Length: 132
Image 1 (cartoon, rainbow, N blue to C red):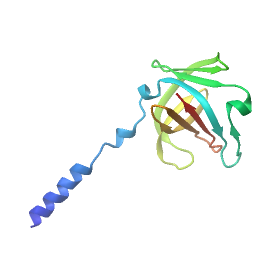
Image 2: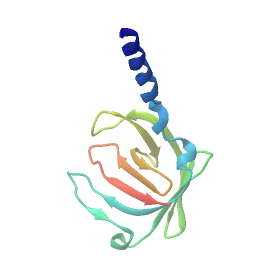
Image 3: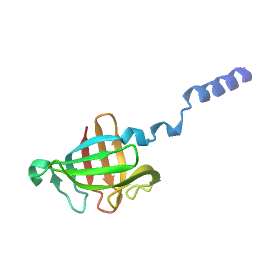
Image 4: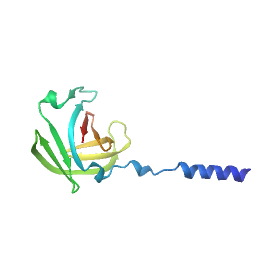
């Protein structure tokens, strides 16, 4: 009976184990064109900004060679580098995927085929939402 219990526990561990790296953001997953949908300020500075409320559209394009190109109303305004790395988030002191570009570091809150949400990795904690 003990062997059966031991086998069951070991089998359970192997079948429920998964890679902790499975949720990693890879450079390939962020490479694309992203259109700004909305920004929401943090607790100390609550606000909501949209292209309509601000009066301009914004698009960012992450390239596969480590560049990010920023467009305002369809006109390129910035062309710089970006970096993806693991790091500690300001708000929860936990490890996250971090995205650094244009002089700021962001926690990648969510990233899928259609959505990118980044959180400013500082006391401000402003959240910016992009769509493909």
